[in-house]
Amino acid sequence: MSSSQRTEPDVHGEAAADGPDADRQRRAYSWRFVTPLLMSSVLNPVNSSLIATGLVPIAHAMGVSVGRTVVLVSTLYLASSIAQPTAGKLAEQLGPRRIFVAGILLVLVGGVVGGVGQNLATLIVARVLIGVGTSAGYPAAMVIIRRRAIWAGMSQPPGGVLGGLSIAGTVTVAIGPPIGGVLLAAFGWRSAFLVNLPIALLALVLTMAWVPKDEPLDRLPLRVLASRIDVTGIALFGGAMSSLLVFLLALPTMDWIPLVIAVALGGALVFWELRAATPFIDFRLFASNLPLSRTYLRCALTLLACYTVLYGITQWLEVAHGLSTIDAGLALLPMGIVAAVVSRPIAARNLVRGPLILGAACLVLASGAVMMFSSQTPIVAIIGVTLLFAIALGGTSVSNQTALYVQAPADQVGTAAGLFRTVGYLGSTASSTITGIVFRHNVSDSGLHVVAVILAGVSVVVLVLTVLDRALKAPRTSSPHGKHTATRLQPHQPSAK
Image (tube, rainbow, N blue to C red):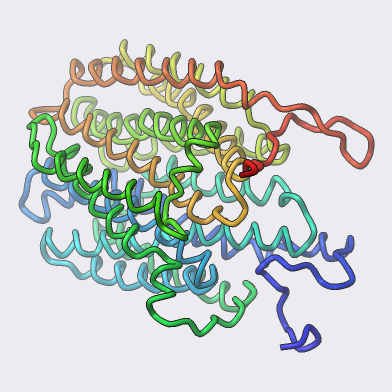
């Protein structure tokens, strides 16, 4: 197809023959282009957090214990932890828009299945479908944004674009519980699943209308296509992650079999990927790009702390503090608002080191404050402490994503973005494991204090890890107007071998 016949920009990254111009850069990230990406990307955090206030009513409706409904949380994390990097890899190889649309369709199916489900098993199936479907949004969006930047001749997109993805996810996570409380109070627990339908339908329509089409696929033999996607690597990764999460979710019972399987499959994965022509996970990248590895670790530990607050304090407010589902959700609403307010200026300037240190410090302070909570603590004081967690959540999520974007190689940004979410799910799964263990018999003040001690330890590690990370110290660069811009990271340069 000649360039004159194209109706869409070359999103695979080749600039036009006459070179990018100012007009192309101005219209590259219009609100029409960005809106469907943001909508689809929030579907996963919507489903991750909204269910928090629905566990108790779902347990009552299904006639099971609240502890058994926690599987609805862990199932989505399990499906998403495997599907996120897989979707990123497929987006790189098959086209990000195709994977983006396929994910939205799966979300629609999952929303319907969950909305009509009559037992816990059906709801688990729905959560798996939703987990896999929503996992396509974020990594595919990152590939689309990266290719759009290359097409427009830009080294990186405007801060508001990347920040928008992070802010949308961060705010959704924080306001999920209060939204869930309102929905469940008004329409019942099924609304936790049916809420996906209007969001996904609108995202699908806008994507088909405003996101440029992918290039036609090359006609490759199935064997060659499987090699490029690295089906074997994906299968080994999925098996290792599944076994690891099964082990984590069984704690405090030590079920050694899934752990042994996870270690065995993990070893096989490393062995295979080091020899694969196009590896699903490039382990050499982790060894050569330690700043990226540290970004993953910071993300996992930070989300472990924040999700423990979302799930642990929500349950504690409902059971030990005597709040209704809707009141417990509304008590966390300011957390979402503050997270959004904090995130916006950080995203606009692509700030990294400062917000990460501030966020880690807020985690330490907030964890210490939770140790003093009791059933008699005023709600205003509890909300005040959650605002410290909001500062940590809003600042670190944007800054870690910016670090990821510039540290990951351009041709692996989809897989890297998927792994970014996966390590976050590991942290989130660990948080649900912690609350499940501590609150396994009853939800009490003493149990919350144990959670707070764990949070404090994690927060100190995050703070030390951030302060000592010299790679986050980036030189100032000059703007076109001669003024100094915010401190930014330098893009990752592959080593010459």
